[in-house]
Length: 375
Image (cartoon, rainbow, N blue to C red; front, side):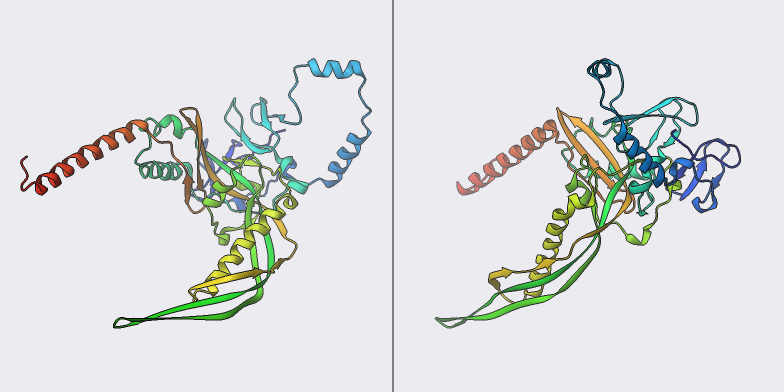
């Protein structure tokens, strides 16, 4: 069952309004703070004992006979490995989603659909940051981003593309990791003094050692293979003052996904990122030298620890001349990232204008060299 949160006054569906930070009812106009509602859909509750039973049941399923296998291969069914089908709690229509979607919309009645069991047990987030930017403000940010791209095609900035703008709670692993810094090298200072026609260069060498313990807390790494990692890093940081315990009541009205990358799958990536931070710390601590040579890095890191969180992101994917482009906006801070398409018409016009200006400047210079300029 794909569940919804009902209005206490009229039983219509509630959606979370990021601008007011309230759950609102479009039918009767009522609004509620999330903490005011105590109803918890059954499907959003953890049921570890049921999960264990399902796993045991799956292990006990007998191997299918060749006839049964052939029958299943030809039956027009949806692959359970890629898609699942749920029933909309508002109208009874089928809601079909991929395996990582945990909040969607009914294509028939438009109701927000909470596929609650996908955010329970091991998939239940520890934290979340609710959306602070609603759709209207996200659209404004998108238009501003488009105007910043002087070569963005005029046809791209259209209502048709804006309709594709999607608010998605992205699963992130928030990593804690400690590092023991252990660097050594040679600091070099070069001093040049010129007196009249005499120049004296003095070079001094210093032993450089940097040791200590560094702590990083809640470094975010997205937990989905289908999400662009660089795009997510580009819209950081998230303000953790807005971090709160996970509450499903902030989900309706937005999409949400579950992870398909476990925390341990990202261990090497988090170590690499922490190493980058450590290198920056080392460089910052050796600015007193002109340069540092022969650097030896014997640093080490603790075993990373991670907790799951849902973080808000506005997405837009679009195609232009056969190539897919992505726009993303931090749903909390409004930070945007992406690479807009380039209009060949605009580039051609600009090139022609620059060529014309260059021709005029060249004509003026040649005229002055010949003793005068005649227009």
